[in-house]
Image 1: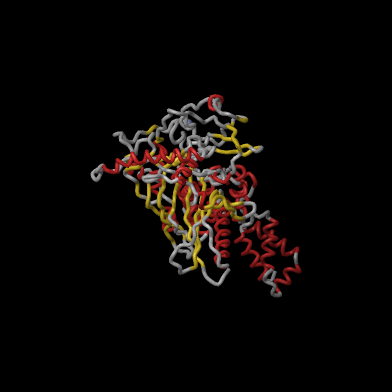
Image 2: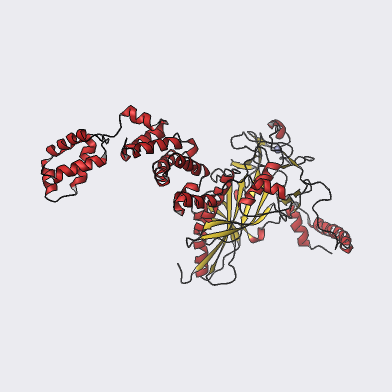
Length: 481
Length: 101
Ligand SMILES: [Zn+2]
């Protein structure tokens, strides 16, 4: 890039929809995704005069649980506030949010830093608010669907502790993993259940004062987060290199063009006139309530990774791969319990099985192979009933049909041939049929050994016990024939 | 304390009110008078009073997470000036400020 080295300073604001049955302040269903427009709407979420909101306890509890998982303090006293602005997707003319007294604050999550070492990203606050409606733009009009208006939304604000697009990306992944472990959100960015904004500034390394901060909104995928930040860092460094100044603006990200664009300049910046929500009473959160919620927390990703490293001898990277989804971690542990060879199970799970899940694009919970069935398959390999190559094709069959490995091996006659007499006959046949290769092998072309192995395996349709074949071939080829 | 003309214009913009020149001046005077009146509160000694968001003594009024029937859609849309296939229809808005959250 330029002569100078630059430092990037990134903070993130993440919104995640909470998986409650009903909305934040009314009894309308929060499951809006497939609902016809404006069918989950009532006087409260439509903001008709006289309608009174009532706080959904489950949303408060989910927020406290997230706060605990993010190592936050839980407010003993918390208040909702009105954030006033006009937009067609906001029926009340204000959003009920939290301002001065959020439910949780001062936490941190651990991510892998740029230097490969663990680093903490501080969480400034995680508070509760409500989602807006949805707009569809058609034929010069905007169409408003209020089904999403009032769905509980958790806002998680980090401190500006990230120093690269990769760190920002890892932070987001970590948040998603934690939210999913807790079961409080699908955290699915592609479906809008998790949304993200980044604020970032760039300054020459060593400079004390911060550079001008820009905000990038509507980052709707993990890829968008990384690409938009990378683009914006380059853009700002180029400006600074030419002696220019970065403008304080709010940017959008154009995924197709692969560039940011200005949405709002500083002059138009919002003035929300927050004030305490007069329709809602404050929350007093007792120690007992917090502790009873703490007791519901599952083992969280960091703890699980540590335990997997210690108990199963996995590296941090390996443990991380397994622990990134709670369901995968549970599947792995169940399989290891049934077949206590952690590395072997890891190998098959992250190899054949992950490849299948990726190709089929299904979660592990929708897979037909149970941990117990994999254990059975691996025992068939261990006791020599089938060889590893056969096991791979049996596993494919299991993934496709859900049949037990034993059933497949029996039905297809795949059991390994270890019988020496039977295999010796095959080996002799191969050797008799290929005198040229035998001569060249004996003249020193030892690489042909693998070719002979292949011939025998083909002749036995892959069922020959490789160790036995190897032994027999060695005897014949090294001997005088 | 007297409000400036810019103060009035800003507040009017926040409320999406279009004021005439004459109204800007009139409301500048009215609003200044209201603020002046409210200033009397500054004379009260509140050194022993902590800030509060409510004067009601109740706390933790919450409901269980249960789904209740919503309104029929024709009722939801009954007062709308314009609708289209079950949606409220409004003038096109640019997507620049969507997803406020
Ligand atoms: Zn409602």
